[in-house]
Image 1 (cartoon, rainbow, N blue to C red):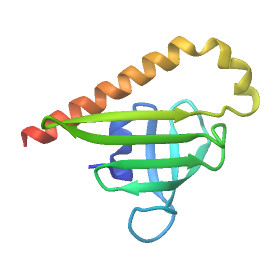
Image 2 (image 1 turned 90 degrees about the vertical axis):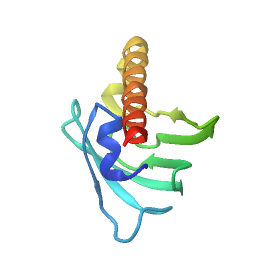
Image 3 (image 1 turned 45 degrees about the vertical axis):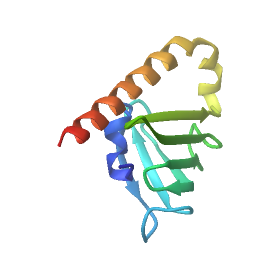
Image 4 (image 1 turned 135 degrees about the vertical axis):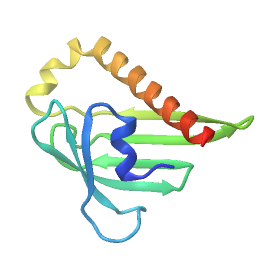
Length: 126
């Protein structure tokens, strides 16, 4: 199940996620992400949330301000398929590094999807 507290399990670059608004997770919920390589936190806002189906958020501050991340969960033949669509926008000094980051981003995404697969499969066994 997608929850903000579970997000660091999915994403190895994220150390902490903390909800900054009150109430249950849903459209409009705000939260902050603290990543390993970025000493500053990134604020984000949930754009769309359907439990166990879809989680969409946009980054409202930091290096990734303006980025939108979509996680979609579909059940196909009794298995869960996760589709992630990222529309990253890199700001500031880091924008200069984008042309050199292709391979690193691919490895990061593959590692992240491997984490999700392991988590989903282990939860299915329990």
